[in-house]
Length: 155
Image (tube, rainbow, N blue to C red; front, side, top):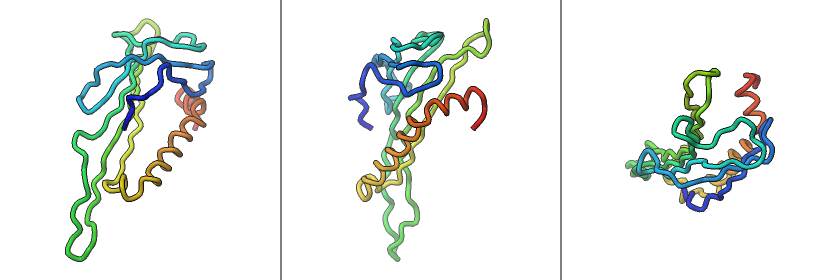
């Protein structure tokens, strides 16, 4: 996952109550060596009551790849793949939120997990990219709806 070219400020997707949200990314240290992390250190657009990153209310964006990339297992004696290992990639957003006024903050975690069958990266790259295009497009298209669902519980 080549995320070193990520834009800053990053344009946020539409959400109820946020107008033209943008997020300024500052390189941070990921929790593990197989990740890249950014702290959201400034906000743009109208985001009333939204906080940028701080120690007590973190706001980070982390990209994670497998520590060890898996490859296809050998084909057995009758020419069949008996198992197809998966390489798991993740995009994680951590955001400090207040569960109740006057109480300690808690960290909300939103994770997108992408499991790619080993070998598909070379044998079927176009379809891997199409699946990701569809996923990211769908999330962007229904961004406000997902936000509304997380608030009102209606799917």
